[in-house]
Image (cartoon, rainbow, N blue to C red; front, side):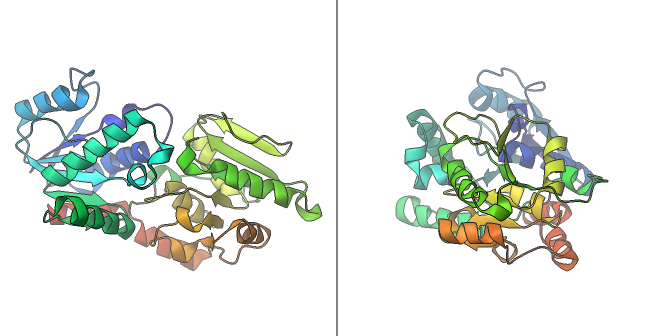
Length: 325
């Protein structure tokens, strides 16, 4: 088969979930699928760039005539005769519209509309998103949807990272773009309360993000804006625990990225998908969240890490996808 891929997400600044997915998908496809030919569309190979989805990708599809089009970034071109496989990366804008601008809500809901109406298959990263899509379809579209659930793999750069320093440092970690849906200030407030306890007064909170606007500041809080991936991965290897408190998540790469280094994850229930629930310290409220900061109940050991590596595996991802196209 000739398979075309919307690879435009890699052009975005910094690192975010969709970009990490796209970069690792390309590596996985080239490494684990030698039978099919892939055409990765990016801003260098597709023109015009200014009308990427509507015209650029459509023109590329008309010229290349692929058998399958993979809409990695949720957006389907105006024209393609290929079988359309869309990738839905979550529905936070649908269930939590108050955290999005009118422009973003309009764009994302249009993508959702096209995805449901035109896709032959929709691929999601969690059974949670599958259930949400089915509920939306039942109440609005009433179509016969084929939804494929495949968990993302652990990013290659995390698996290949070689860290000589094994000692854990006295800091907790938050990794999230500074968007309202990510609820970063919840984790900061919880840490500040923990920081008042004598045992934890010399601990720090490292916040890895794209902007500090609106975030709570403190003496023992350090912000790292748009840092390179290698530095972030080094933080994963040394942290006491990752904190995450999003109002909505459809996967959450930092969770598995932290776990494979043997470090615990402390999360609000809303930030945890069913697939990672067994590996995460999941709290119902701030009190329980702080209790886990003091003493996590779930700490990954070698057996758990090996299980995580098998479950969140890019070879398995590609094989599962190709076998269903």
